[in-house]
Figure 1 (cartoon, rainbow, N blue to C red):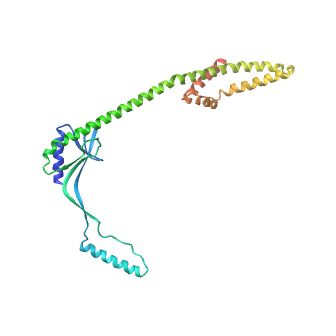
Figure 2: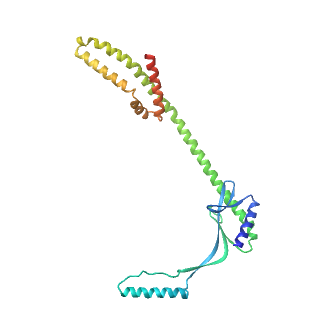
Figure 3: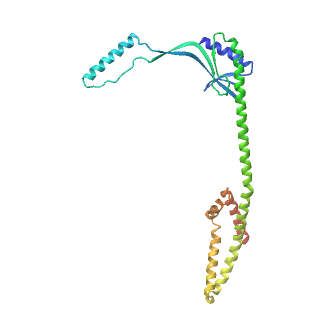
Length: 255
């Protein structure tokens, strides 16, 4: 532990000379310059060897095997148990330093020898290269994001003339309906004074006029306006409010 502490202390001093900070986060040890950081992992080399049971472990194993044999003779079943690991891992005391971030062609792993002072001049250079790579990659992502937002804005602006044209056409049609309905209502009222003398063709014309008036009046209902606007504009709620204000204003004028 003291060796690791000493190593981190000297590494932090070497990095500080290049304005690289060394800190610890939830993801582990990291070096950073500004918003860009490189994660590090310090490990210890180890080797794997087949485990040789100790006398105590062998005694437990033999006792369990005898109980299994007794259980088998009685027609019972006793599960197998292991009393030692398959392998032993022996740590060598040799530290290793590894950069977790990816950079094509860059060295990522070093062995930390006991005399690490000569290495302290090379590792900061490796971190600088990695941080420069990450900075370039981040700036490319940010530029791509700006380009994407710019293109999205341009596409939205291109939709505006078409949307405004649809709204204007809808308003004009609604205004025509608002103008036609009162005239048609007065015409029907006047025409009904002559129903007693009217021919069948005249009656059919009055019936058609009444159907036309009902259609025009239906266009002013909120649910019909919202449905029509939903197929013509991208903001039916806002447009509906505008239409209703126009209708109320026109009704006030007619009254």
